[in-house]
Figure 1 (spheres, rainbow, N blue to C red):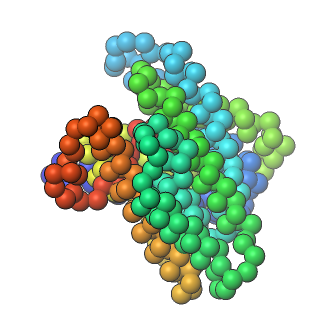
Figure 2 (spheres, rainbow, N blue to C red):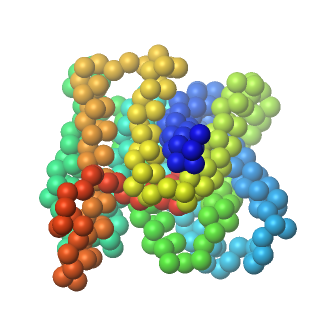
Length: 328
């Protein structure tokens, strides 16, 4: 297998793992309280990150402890990340895994509204059209078998998408241009999350003694695969391919979420919700392409320089894949 194909395969595995996380979280919260699930997921992730840091301590030169910049970024990002996972996990407990994965993908088109630094002069009209398609898709997904009051879980996932978009924008604001090591930053965030959920989940800790092997498997999968492995694999792969290609492959996450929900949980789409799923994927990809092209060409146009877009047609591109995780 060539290096390019190996990198693509790793990115697809990351997207599949993240897509499957909604069903795993749904299964875990069916057996344990939500706050306890979050505490265990964060604690296991933190232990794994600390172990990786310890293993790498003697292999690299330079500062081994956290720098001031890593702490200044990691603490607030740990708080916003915990808020994302809290709303998201409560949401997935009250909707389908497929809907959860599709609605949370609204983050892709919500983030540019909050992160305006890369969009001088505002976003192009086509982006607002793509966002409109995604809003229509959310309405269709929430309607399920017919138009009715939105389900609590769908509304929570919509809220999670808004909070996650804010978190992603904050990641860029606090890490761009700063000497921040991804593993060190992630470790800070997992430790902050563990501390935040420790007190509210403490009274439910005895439930872990009665937890069966299947639930522990889900918890370990969420912590070690959906968090630590996925982040490190993403970082490794993004360093070996273009940002556009990485985003395109990682953007298949909602597709995998729907596929896993249908294949393993017996979920199904009605004609209306199926149309919503198609529109959501199409709208997010369209929005990614428009935002990526605008972010690339707007600064050069502002300086009066011709751009590649001015010279010849280009294939649609997507927003750069983040080098820091949006979730744990």
